[in-house]
Length: 493
Image (cartoon, rainbow, N blue to C red):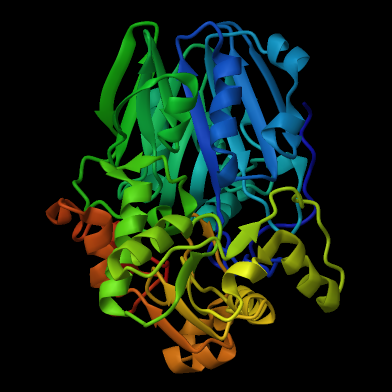
């Protein structure tokens, strides 16, 4: 349970996470993490275990649970999957009715126990635990200020900044938290716990998802609604941008730390890739939204072909939508091996290429001799798309037409997604035709920003127009976020 000191910072520029993305076996974007909270249930630790298990797709690097019995904290954190970090004996030792839990995303960079959450501290008013999904953009600047005035940091996580801001404040917990949230800039969903309170907050634009549910008289909070289904909780509502909820012995207190009414700008990648298909966000189901993306893709960029296949797992729903719209049969042309594990190592380019075949296989009897439409959710560097196209060609596909159910990813994001430097984003410097040649496809098309908005919104387009952050996709569709009277692009530039 002790903190391990990380050896080097996770940022090198002015923004936390700037250029942090590194190429792994697949060049998919990395979500920051998932959070889960319980207030008022005697079996809070077990509920958190099952809730985090449902959120495992949001982070596979580390997992942690901190529980309060009203007098003291009991917590455990470890590296690995939820099922690897916790067992029955550990869970039984985490007694209490208030808890917060966390899963952290996997990176190819340094992975330290010190950065596993929830972060737990002792301060003047007792115990304090913090868990977050997202990034604090100005964490490096605030950290330098705090260190210069005597603060000693135990981790390199930007999350620790909020704990220091609260601990140094002479105000009570709630007012100190409000001041802290008004100092930080970024996209985040916070759970903060003391011995007898739980604070829940969302950034002023609602960039990161967070929802509230109920299980009997207990309140449940989670990054995605799929976690509510897992434990049998009922969804109540989404946490609003700039909202600060306080739960204590007197019940639920609804309030805000930011009185301004900013435009909501939920990250569009939640719909495209990050969230589980059985989760709902802003009243829109992910599976249904992704099917509409595939259908819209077919309307915008039809190509005559024999079969449609999706890249597992996030693109399956979109592939079904494309197939239904066109009448071209949907087939399982690509199969994902779920048992290669997170620890598979690729020490050379040759083994890296072989690693793709270990994790993803083309079904030769399905694709051989066929004109294939391959549906995927995004292209980051282009390396993964090229490998998958070549897998299909090696299995006998005579044509491979790639359809991407998002606009071209041109700009890095600093508000909660691990993204590469702009120079590594293939769409930032190449045309669609050049990318098509780069990935060895017969044709390539991306979904338009207008089509993406319409697909996500469904019949509620008025609620979504201007309600999504699309800045990473297209310079013509910047999401401008106003902080301290200054407008900034959603990508942080």
